[in-house]
Image (cartoon, rainbow, N blue to C red; front, side, top):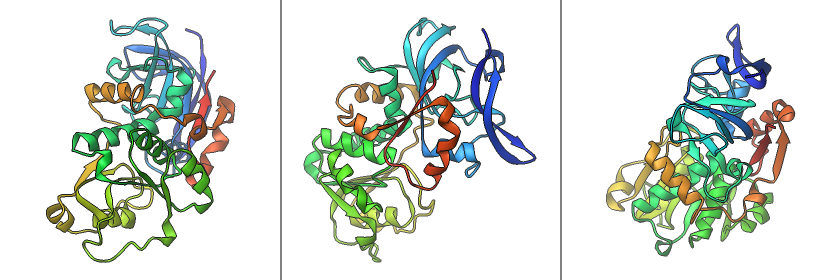
Amino acid sequence: MTEFRAYRIDQDDGKVVADFATINVDDLTEGEVVIKVSHSTINYKDALAATGVGRILRKFPLNGGIDLAGTVVSSESPEFTEGQLVLVNGCGLSETLDGGYAEYARVPADAVVPAPHGMSAAETMQIGTAGFTAALAIHRMEQNGQMPENGPIVVTGATGGVGSIAIDMLAARGYEAVALTGKAEQSDYLEGIGAARVLVRGDVDLGKRPMEKAEWAGGIDNLGGDVLTWLTRTVGYGGNIASIGLAASHELNTTVMPFILRAVCLLGINSVETPRDLRLAVWRRIGADLRPRNIDRIASNTIKFDDLPGTFQAFIDGKVTGRTLVEIE
């Protein structure tokens, strides 16, 4: 196979550096399936990796990008055929495996997911890891008894990729989705993608007692820290809180009282190491009852591969709303 371009992350004297490089398939990490990549996306985690602000890569060098979609070039696994449209999200991409910021990828067969029926490569990457994480959170909550009739679900960090798609998916399922955001100016956007109400974080009293008045049937939290603590205080009996991120803090200062007296359940959501059977089941739901209705509004920003390096700082600075699609070819 001829040489191709990749956005490669490396270390130089202990400092993370990233730039385009010309490589070939033999330079890629091992895997049974070779994919011609057409689309990827940008997640906050990708920005942390490419800038070195976060310690994401466990080995160097690697191609960036925790998401990819494209067509199979070759497969040692009988599960996949040449020309088949597939995707990969998480599964160690841009951590221990070369990721999606390249014209070709080689990945383990058990990481590859057939694209949901009727979805293009671009649409799967508009959804990507962010949408998969949102869907996994809802799936886990519903496995644990969450139902629309139980009451409103709060989504924190609501203007981000996970938060935006979670609101869309929840509204489509009949839930009353309540958006919590620090960006009051984005209220119209949030209501437009399905939020029944918008709470501005600075206007919310986070409380001090182990339990405050029960207001919510559950929550999907992107922030951690004081906001996650607030959710444990204010989610009602039998409610589920899906913890999917720590954009504000990795700390959680609470007591066992909400978990005992209100039977609140705190669910940890790990989209990277999701078992294959569960990963496939959630992607099937993304193609069916959890398919976002407003994905073009959420993923309204599309960039070319060449423009990738200049985009990451805005994610670090918290200036991005929704999702950004990357056209590799």
